[in-house]
Amino acid sequence: MLRVELRKRRGNFALDVAFSAPTPGITAVFGRSGSGKSTLISLIAGLTTPDSGRVVLGEDVLYDSGRPLSVDARHRRMGVVFQDARLFPHLSVRSNLEYGFRRLAKSVARPVAFDDVVSLLGLAALIIRRTHELSGGERQRVALGRALLAQPRLLLLDEPLASLDLARREEVLPYLEKLRDAFAIPIVYVSHQFDEVLRLATRMVLLDAGRVVADGDIATVSRDPQLRAIVGPDAVGAVVAGLVERIDAAGLAIIRVGDATLSVELDDATVGQRIQIQVLARDVIVATEAPRRLSVRNVVSARVVSIAPDAGRSVLIELDIGRTSTLLARITSRASQELGLAPDQQVWALIKAVSLRGHAFSVPAR
Amino acid sequence: MMLSAAESDALWLSLSVAARSVAFILPFAILVAWLLTRTRFAGRTLFDAFVHLPLVLPPVVVGYLLLVLFGVRGPIGGWLYQNFGIQLAFTSTGAALATAVMSFPLVVRAIRISLENVDRGLEDAARTLGAGPVDRFVSITLPLIAPGILAGAITAFAAGLGEFGAVITFASNIPGETRTLPLALYTALQTPDGDTLAARLAIISLTLGLGGLLIAEFLSRAISRRLGRNLDRRREH
Image 1 (cartoon, one colour):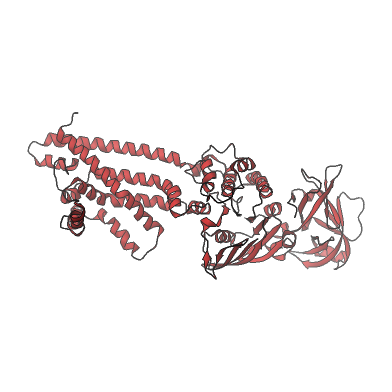
Image 2 (cartoon, one colour):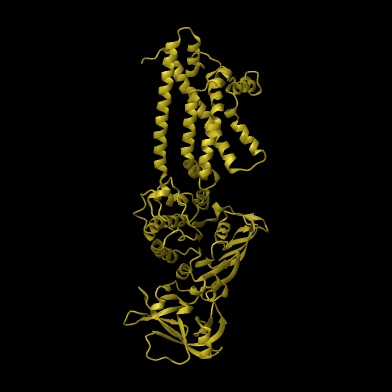
């Protein structure tokens, strides 16, 4: 468990955060630019001195302003991957990868082997290259390898994909998934892209203006009004998680979520896999009668929990689909009135299988 | 063109004095450049101005101040002479010292500019990878400022070949000891029918300068290639 409680004032920006991240596991720190994410990483890594607070990793106190105690960044053994890779330009790719590894104390165990990192991150072809010959995505992969080989007790990834275009991002993301699944190293992943968080993390900390405004399971935080304000109305959607029950004849993955099942177009799904799905609120249709003869693959029985005014002329409806799984639906307030929707009413939620394509990702089982 | 004994003496002495002055300068220049870019202390501006003084003072004044401080009766020179038997004034080592003081600000300037251009983020990255302060300086900062150090050293060497005022004041004009090329040329001009010698010495100086500049250009290209200076152009975003 990483426990963080930090305060830092810089000019008229003040960071004041407290959260914990389970280990192993991946915790996303999500917030828009300027919310203090990079400052937070720098404080946890020990590159910036906080005004006050505590950083505790497992049993080890790394920083405590009360004692006072501060372990130097170089002894914290936190692998940091920065947005701009920060490869050493005067060293070859191999020397970059070995930089931290060669500086490890003799007593430190080395569960992460050079060859494993090279094969996991696909670095074999890059090793003899010079760093300026690498593409942006390759640079980030080398930076990840360099951090991993230093045998870190925690990985801090500071928007590692932010400087890459969409195609490069897609090129690096699978490596991040592999890394998450291959090593039991806890990861704090900072991002301002919700799709990255959805794809990689199961827990998130929502940061806004230097404060933690929501913190917990991604499904819970995904329905938080604070998150809605940050991602904007079109990206609002509840995250639900479930297990792949079977693959149907047409190749759709049938996923059990709450009391319902959802059909999703999902490549390489296997039965028993845990899937995390974001169902965008604008993609959910609400019906008060069981619909018949529709193309919609997913018709889910639901109970209205609440109806809240939303952006423009619409309302946001929270729908309970059983076993604490909840969906969000955005419909016009006119439609809501005509259907006579009210809390506790039984309704049907309709979701097109194709609308879930690209919003469903396999995550490690808990 | 065959060189006479006096000419080759002057040539080798010039090269030796310039080389030794560079050796004197580098450790201090790196330290001072580091202090000026990376630290904040009271009197920093005054210190900065002091470092740059040789650029604006007449060289004769620098030579005179060295004589006062490092002469056999001076506070530093006297101590060196009594304890170690080292005499600087009127020796070739003294000539190298005088030359070093004159070129010092040029080197500090060159190193300082490259230190300011070093991405501090790289040093942070090295720190998270377990490198201590000295290790970071040696493994990251020093290689990155190598082009600046080289440029400074070459400038200092070239300027050192021609240092006149400070050398003649502090180290005098002793044949075979402190009579470097410019001093030999000056002496030739003072001598009746020394015109030919003066012209020959001038040609030697010219050749030396030109050769030095070409070598400097070649070296800086080689080192830039090694450092991947075309980094920004080729990095994809």
